[in-house]
Amino acid sequence: MRAGCSLAASITGGDVRLIKARFPGLPVVTYVNTSADVKAESDVCCTSSNAAAVVEWAAREWGVDRVILLPDEYLAKNVAAQTGIKIIAWHGRCEVHERFTAQDISELRAAHPGLVVLAHPECPPDVMAAADFAGSTAALQSYVEEKRPGKVVLLTECSMSDNVAANAPDVDFIRPCNLCPHMKRITLEAIYDALAEMKTEVTIPEDVRVRAKLAIDRMLALPKEKPRAFATGLPLAAVEVV
Ligand code: SF4
Image (cartoon, rainbow, N blue to C red; front, top):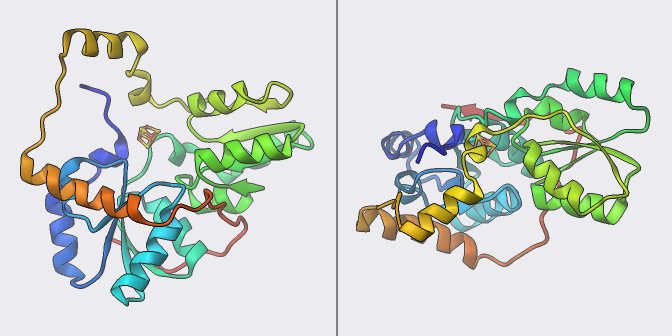
């Protein structure tokens, strides 16, 4: 029950209601790393794979030039740079990805000549700009499997990086380890106990469940596209962080 997420903890349903009151008529796109309460106040959910596509869809569907994208400030800034759509963002951060810096990339490149640097879009925009390729975990995995770089570093949570490394034994992975303490609390043993004893049940009020599911269903109903890579080296875009 203690396995949280700094992004999910950064915002409440009440915060989303206040943002909607301040920016009436704008669609609210919410990252999946949020509570059911927050999803229930949102129009549509997104993942790091489809964030840019969902924001573009929401702008078209609502006929607006601004979209509210919550709660990850860096994902919002990176999506704004990709899409050219003005974004209203929240000041949430992933405590793992926000630790990476452009300086880390310079030092890694100096220590490992020929290194290919891949970054996740929860990283700060200057890290994205300095990387060779950026995208969701699925996009990073596809890049490694298709391009088979000789030496690579994945600027993301290090267990996720380990999962990608397991499928590419011929690739040399440099591993600066930023571990998520919340993910590490989810163990096979704990999952077994929860299922065997049907304990640590999470309950959600029915009206919240129904509204949260609507936001998820809207995302799932959108046409599927290949996880989109984020262009690197883009200039910073207009984002209002509230
Ligand atoms: S790495 Fe941890 S803190 Fe960051 S988004 Fe994932 S669960 Fe949340």
